[in-house]
Image (cartoon, rainbow, N blue to C red; front, side):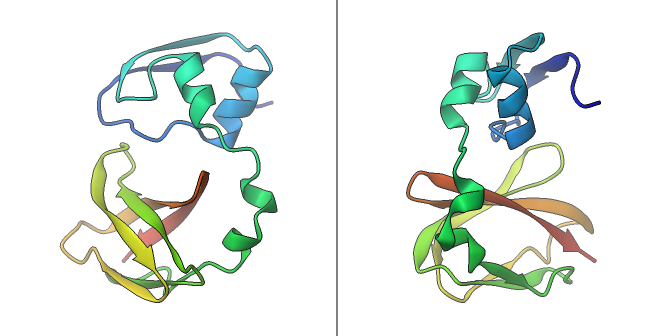
Length: 134
């Protein structure tokens, strides 16, 4: 069960790869091929340097909400005083980025319907949440 041979290569749009399942796999010494991706996603060392292991324990993240989700392209992020965000499509391409403040409204109404991922960074911690545009 789980990852048995990790291959991440030839994806110049891949900019977030320090996800918990990938980090756990690399930390446990699994077989991999990693090369020719975006910055910080080209080697096991680069990926492991972006891995965040304390995200689920952060009180900062427990207060964050994205409403409405699913949405028609406009949603609000609340529960965060300040930080950064990046919105990615399912291929890892960055479609929007900016600074966060409490009750920030975000508009992706010009994007196609589908699933997007929002990466929220507070200090050195990162939370990735799924956003569905109807």
